[in-house]
Image (cartoon, rainbow, N blue to C red; front, side, top):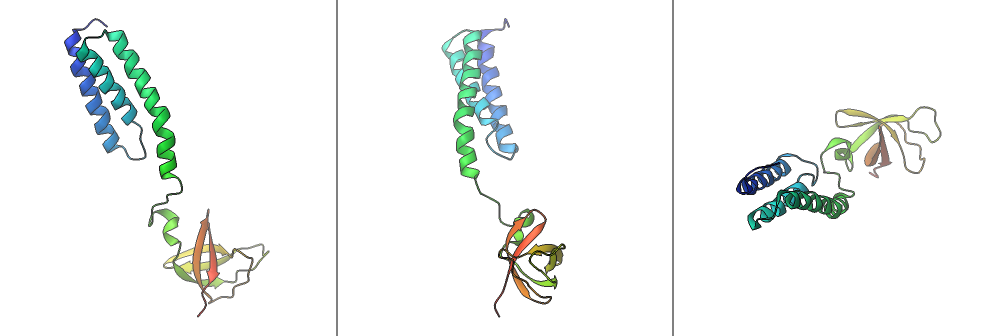
Length: 152
């Protein structure tokens, strides 16, 4: 591309701003931040007066390097984090009542009522729970609640 060298400075800074704005708007991890970093380095190269090809090489190289460094860090930071109150994980720790018998080895899972919801349920140790037994949810496995009885 044959453009004025001074124009590239502002293009790279504008691109960095757009990538940073995109990073703020888009939820779900660090996706656009590496591109913003690459654009900032390319802008510095443009301000120094390096040619277009070196600016593009800097943009691509720095973006790739930042991806390689940041993705594992972000993945490690997000590991095992289930936001409380989101999805079925909100039920962990909640109490309820058995509405149909939960038996070990039964062909049909028992059911429990947790708040206004009805869930298929099982116990972690295969314990039998009769209707009316008060329970606490200790885990959610797909569409099943893993429950333990509450001692009264």
